[in-house]
Image (cartoon, rainbow, N blue to C red; front, side, top):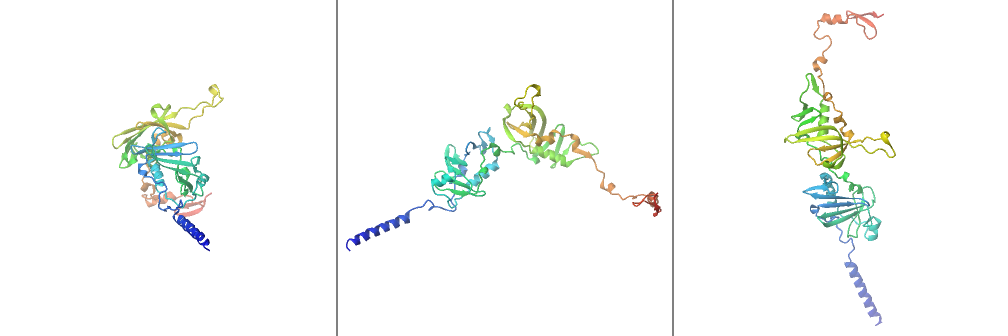
Length: 363
């Protein structure tokens, strides 16, 4: 009995120690807070973002307060897209973890050797955080893990919303001008002037009136000048023959000239020889502007209306006043004349009218 008491005491001590250990042991999820940021970064300090996938990467850099694409001629990135992109990651909160181990992270494609996207947020050369995006457990959901954290989560996102193609990031409104700030538009000898917000043809021929819809379409296309790709610095651009020139005069007095050039013809088809070699005509123009340092490629279809424009298509004959067009028949004529004009007429069933009465079927 005396030997049993010490043994029970030892067992009791072990149980107490085990209980204390279990009570104080912290699980990886012990610090989980539903309001805790997934990416704990002061995004106001982020000035470099690197987006990587398997064989591609894209860099965004903040220069003089504007996001640009350093590896794409330093061309401006869309301010709207970049701000929304950053806001999305700044607002991500931790949900309940879907994985707690390195094995789970690997299964979800959230490790350096295997990932769908890796986003690195930097301040200068300093890395503030790296985030892995992996597979998709369901619609508009992806697995996510912050580098250095064992826990994996599922967040509301699509990997295609973090593209590595510069075309998805460039500011396509770069050439656009605010229509209300245009004072005058010039195109192939045609001059349109802004009169209280309405563009009018200055030298409208007598007896003609503008085709307002056509003029509005023309001005909108010029003010909202669009492009498909940034070709590079315009000084080194390879240009063909000029297809069109147009210009705008802004209300601050600045003039912007635009020129459309034929894109250089591509090389003959492989195997073709001599004059019979097939030369496929390019479906693009090259666009340059006096206000910008870049050359752009644009689809010909986007500027077809401008290239083929004829001045005569912007106006038409004046329509007769509505009062003349709707004047009742016989109005202003003596009653007898109106009556006489009906004598001998044939009604829809083939009967002659005489003195307001039918006289029989016309033979």
